[in-house]
Image (tube, rainbow over all chains, first blue to last red; front, side, top):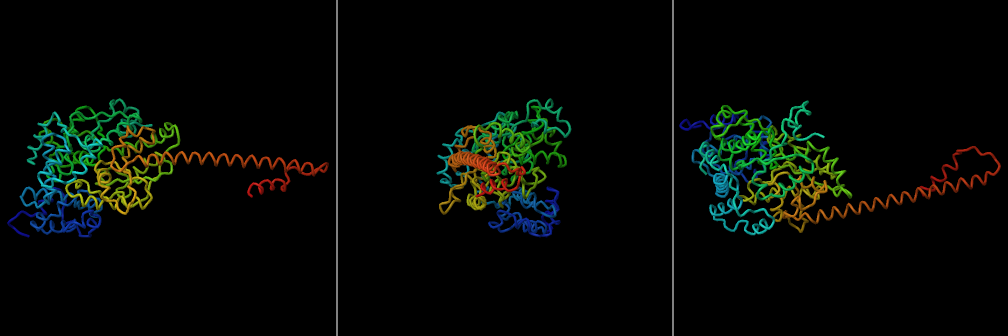
Length: 179
Length: 373
């Protein structure tokens, strides 16, 4: 634990009300985690890093961005540690401290998604996918699905912009989020 | 039978409740039901109309932020859905129907956060720029239909002209994550072995499937950004349903639907038959005898037509078979009666003048033995 940086466990507890030290490493969270096989750090290991205050290792790991927020870990935790909420908070601190190492595609998706909401108040899938493609350079992604979706009435050309879009902009400002 | 408005009221006030919310429930469709899953919106509207439940779309609703919202910032993940609760509140509703499992989770989670987190209730009107008292309850389509299970059963029996196409059909109820987790938000009967959707399937006349992947994650929001994970997770879901005899998977979430429907092509190997993915509202609609076009059944990637045609054909065969069995049984009964009459006649002739006691065991046993042979 370093003394120069704030204690991650304390910070997490302040943000979530969850004391990471209550995790006794039984691993039940990781046993049910759908992304465990693709992650370097599994949920109980993230809990361990947080508990020990290995700040960089926790904040800079890619695994926290592979969490699907399916909540299986939290639902099954026998000690009520809520790893899903802790991982959410770790991600937030990682973004705030500029240490987030999210996979490019996932980061681009979240960014494009939030930009859609801020501009229109609602999600415009076509706009989201186009923006995502520009952000990732993955231009051919799902191109073959587009005609099928269009034919089935699942793709709107025009965005559905709400009247209260200024209220949405206000919410983003009030929360200090700029996509 | 109870209405939604009545169910919104505390127990014991059933009679007074309809006056309290005369316009029924507020409806929050969410972006997916306006975008990639219009069939969920269409089938839901058709079903609530058929069941006589009034719903009114919240004017000028906004996106709930989905996972991108709360993954980026906790407060944003609360404030975006809270604006919709504030709008519903302004309209005088005390209940919001959010059929999309992800929207449901965000709206319910915002309601809980504002109620429980220090200072959030006070800050919220300032953040939203509108009054907000956090008085509106949130519920999803599974809860709505489950509350009306008895009504559905009754209407299914009354509204079908012909045989019920779902009788004896095995449907796998897939709940995924956000209809059951977190348990304190989802209000489910059991987070590991939920039965609410299974009950609705049974109310429609179909059989539920006992399988393993009911509450496993489909990959949710990674559909675009990490498709390989979605295909891996979806494959295990579809394969388990098929292994347990399901003829279709039933969902109540547009994300689960597109991950299992749109991405199924990438999951299917070895020339397997694709498994149709139906919204629970489409199943109820079909059982209520609503036309397939009204339920958006033509909008899926895995075609639903072959299954529906097959169900109708099987129902017709079943009816024919029942008719044949009944005719056979009637013929047998008639033959037995004739035999008995003949035996009695013969016995009467044989006995002649001798006074045999009526109801002797021997003549009675004879026709039965003949019937069994």
